[in-house]
Every structure is written in C-alpha cells, then in structure tokens.
Length: 104
Image 1: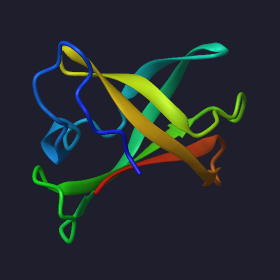
Image 2 (image 1 turned 180 degrees about the vertical axis):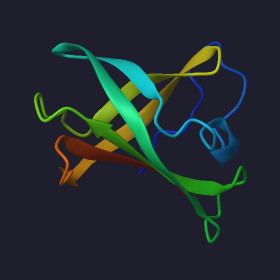
Image 3 (image 1 turned 90 degrees about the vertical axis):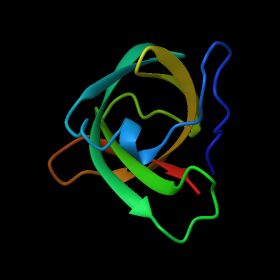
C-alpha cells in the first residue's frame, strides 16, 4: 500500500520515470530519530497494476540501525516532497535493511 497523493504544493503523482535513472541515489528523509539516508536499490515496473500513472515498486537500502517502522515518510523527488509509505522487508545480505514502496 502506498499513500500516493501528492503533498501540498506538488503537481502530479509519482511515476516510474521519476525513479528509473536514480538507482544508487541516496534520499534523505526525516524520521522520529532524525534524518536518515535510504539508497534507491531497485525499481520494478508492475504492468498488471490498475493505477492510471502505471504501477511500480521501489526498494530502498537503509542502515542496520535504526530500523524504521512502516510509515509514511516525505521523500524529496524532483523539486518537491512526496509522501511515500515504506515497509521494512528484511535484512540485506551485504548489511542494512531493505524497505519497499509499492505504487499499484
């Protein structure tokens, strides 16, 4: 589940194109324990999605600590902040925690 409404002041919902060329890029988000960096690790199209803008999923890699709870976080995308619901999906074999956002 993803909270997909554009935040106040943004113009359009997010699309796969907003992330396709950003693999490896770090996104700084504010959390209850301060600013955290999540690196975009994977972008996957979900062609069966009914979403008008097209479906896709994102995987982010964050540090091992702190483990962020599933929640809506404001991500900087382009010139705006967008609210994205992320869920921890497991530990990465190389270290850190993987998080997922699904736009379906």
